[in-house]
Length: 177
Image 1 (spheres, rainbow, N blue to C red):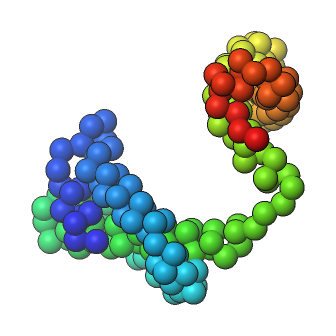
Image 2: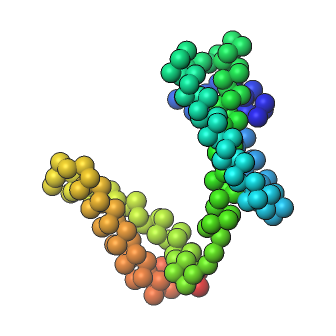
Image 3: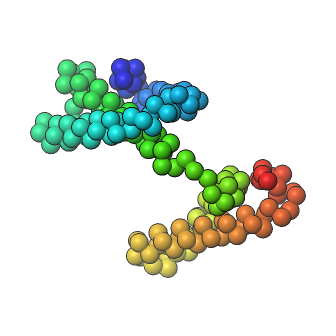
């Protein structure tokens, strides 16, 4: 926690500190590469959830009473420690719950795990195309959102099913199995 708090004092780009997120990536890699740590996170997920809720409660009380504290004052440093501790506990909660509740396999998942990279590559094109026309068609945000998501997903899946039948596209998009 201290290293993240110290890294938060380093220069940031557009309000995002690359050093803080770099530490998160390195720690995430170290956690994901060790099954013992993942098992420990799974067994302690409730504790991390309680710490997260307590941290967010403290942050909310502080923001509503004295405002957002930052800088090198004593309150700013304490707030940074609480803030980054809360974020870290939240990430550990998500990882522990994911290990517990999302660690399963179905035919659907095994089929589409091979399709994920191809769909990832092509979906953005369809989102842009559909958004261009749908945003001109209606001003209702929820309708725009739903139409863009449904159309982009449907056409991306259809495109994947077509592409996986041709060797050149299998090579180009790295389609497996």
